Image: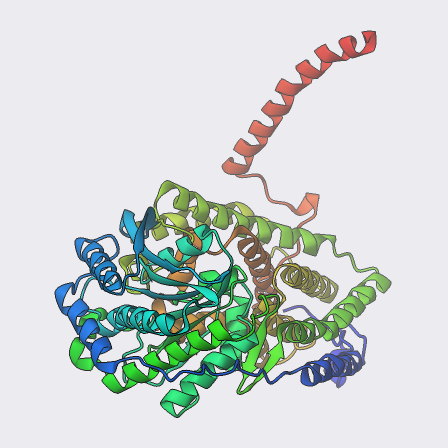
Length: 624
């Protein structure tokens, strides 16, 4: 730790000194400005009204639906995507639809599934034309992970699809022609990346009014709505309210939904294991009805004995009523906004974004004030910024090696889609690949470390400059987050507001400094905890996020933002632990090692080859 002036030992340092550089009054006063966006968010909440219920009573048959689910689960217990059982189940469903004179077609396509390679997949699509071209899609995936019958997940959803087709044809004969086109869709690879749903969303050539996905509706658990997408969007509030109202009418209880913080996490890091996600991400109204948790359980325990006929019938009748409400009701507004649902009310997404952005103001003003103090004291920031640059280069090197390994096939590859949490790609860490990544990263750190290790005592001015540079870089990262996805600020704000006080506590007790430093990691831990607990990944959550990056579900821009945050966290952590050194001046730098000499020789040789070419071209240019 640096040696401080004697004034810091006589009592509490004065405001604005090197020992107490932050303006607490400015920080506290700026929080008053956040109150205005909070008021706006409070006054713009809505209580969405559901669409009117259908005029006809639901005719969904519990006996027929359970019979179909048991038949499918017992005949084809192994329905892994692309397997023989999967294709036979598709033929079985096609025959069931044919009984009701609904003609189905098969859409075959290939996709790469992590851990399994290229697989031939098949959707079953049955289109019943109506007066309007806008389609209402009733869908369910029929596959499972191949280790059990999957009676609930998702023989129940597939059986309900067939039963709803029967009910729909009976009702159609009574009312002649339906207003909407209705599509009965059985998707493949619902357990392996939602690939069938993604395929239909990309290739269907007509407008889609709404999508209702049935997944695991025969369990004994409470009915639940899943509304998250693979982009920071939400389904229209009227669709969610309609689905909730019809389910409450049939089951006698309000359906469960992700809590507010869970919805914020899903908007900040768009992800779901249910098939409404590809549609919501593309701006198509969609919702999933299920009795399953966020991560469906293993199919080995999903037997026909565990089916709840009562719950199956309740959710099936609710799905029929939702179809009737959508078919006879007014058109839903297209998805143009996001929502955070708090009970029966919904907070508009733009209001939540405004609050999150406003929470940057206290940090930004205090960080700028800290920068101005450094300028007034003529404290140079260039060495600290060069230190950040070196750390940024190290983390970019590590990210580049990770991407290179993904291109070489070291990590399990596949489509840009969620990875099945029960697959080997999600839980089996490639040890040799991780060891190679660690070795090459250590090599990169060995190159950067030579100019980052402390070689002399750190002065109070150097330490303040380094804190200021790190905080300014964190602010730049926050602005990139605002430009890409403002909801993701929930993962960045804890580090901003906690680490802002590191300059103020650098002379405090080690436990205090450690607590402030640890508080800044709450944002990334929130994301890791969400995957570890909500999706049941446990200690595999870090590797699962890396695997999502390897298959490019996590795109390049979030990766670069994460690299910038890691470099700033690296710098501030080194400061808090007393292992920081500003970038050395030319006369303080250690001699170049063999790697730097090799790089320097390569660069000089390249320049030497270009110079003769330039001198030869110069006379020609002068003659012209």
